[in-house]
Image (tube, rainbow, N blue to C red; front, side, top):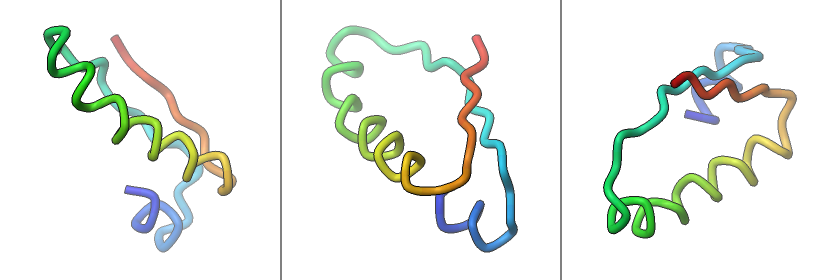
Length: 50
């Protein structure tokens, strides 16, 4: 996601709020945290839609 946004000079990324159970939330937290860390190093905004 970050690579494509950078290549295409995108400034805002919008994602939908996931509908997960507690187990899925625990398992996917690391992926989301990695996305946030990478976004912090770029000029990209993240919008989470519910």
